[in-house]
Image (cartoon, rainbow, N blue to C red; front, side):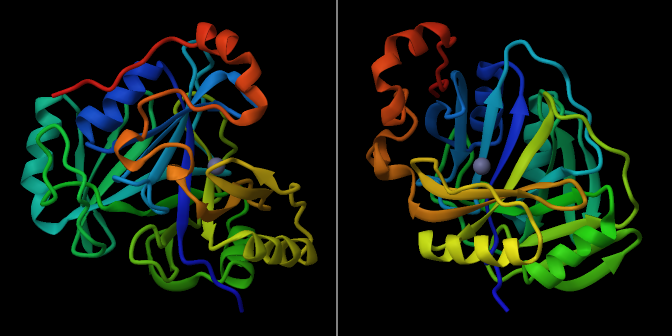
Length: 310
Ligand code: ZN
């Protein structure tokens, strides 16, 4: 059976672009690795935040809307996005969140300690203190490798029909059920980061897509060949799979599972350095070739944003 290594990226809908940028860089210390537009709606931004190079498994992407309706987290969505941070960094992060006036709660993610809070637009974020994963070499605004986010721990899915989502994870995508606690089943894949999916087994009422909700979760494959293999596997299992899309930094397909969650499968290649050098990632507005001819119009319609320097 084919198995996924783990998460490629998670994409969310958020509010004000500068607020979004400030939170993920200034507070969480991620790198702003790509400033581009929504390829399906080029007059809105698409931001990417990750580690130094935007390695798969570290990348959260956002569609910021200055004006837009607030969503509601519910069935058929990623309810919580979890990040891995070094085991010994708990005091550091608690202190940091307090300094930024961010309310958090301490909790347990199965056997590991975690803290949970919301981003400025209502996304549920969790930091899991763990020795899993390699230290990040991206240091920013007072966060050193000893504290920096290493990448995703995983994601918690809420489903309209948990048994159907369970079936997808176990029988189609090749995730291994490794634990169960209260109404959460833990699934694992093979990567050292971004390899956990926690599924809530209580059916949840349908969410509403909008600001403060996750739009989709993407799993990683090596290349286009593997992507097409997965497309065939999913079609054979009766899923409606999108045509292959060229997202410039990866190629991908999308499908909606029967519990309501929108999944994407994305290639590791070519990655975020395909149109900018590593040192320059995120510094200028990057457009796919089909929009270069209307760059002026696009630039005029977007609110300028900037990563604060420290
Ligand atoms: Zn995506």
